[in-house]
Image (tube, rainbow, N blue to C red; front, side, top):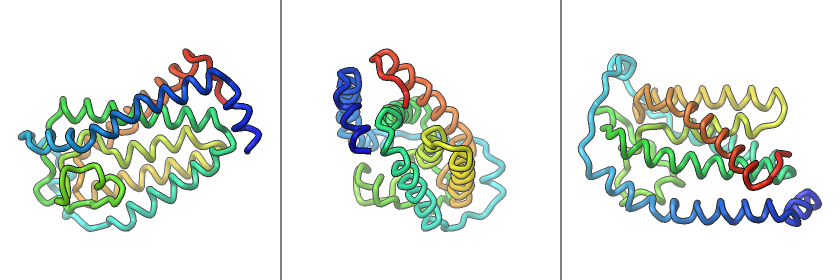
Length: 210
């Protein structure tokens, strides 16, 4: 693994891409807290959602976090020996973050009235205050992040496992009523776009896939 990273870092195209992704990521991360403050202050709509309307919410937060973060750690650990693949994954995540900010701004939604807050210890760092934030809706960030683990995985079994985990987290956030059905179904679509765009970006910079 050390040799793979040393060889990758000796590639000028890899270094250029790495620093470019970092330069884009930093302002996006810094902008999260004020951006969520703006989103929270806007009035949104409640979309028609018979699945949410016809079910009773349940607090399944621990299961969401276990599946989500175990899947991320497992996938990233397996991708570490493949620096170009991991760089593409980071690039895709940054693009996904930007897409989600644009989508949230264009599609103003209110949370379901009976939503049970999903207090994520990581994402909570970027919210405006200590109050659970419920309006980071369109689209589901948890579902999109797990969907990204599918193309980032190597091997048929690993990819199938990540598909199952993605579907499970999608079902769990719906069960907790922290997202609308459209949020969950849109998430993998945006992930696919981000993965495709990240591959295109790396090729434009001259970086080949692992």
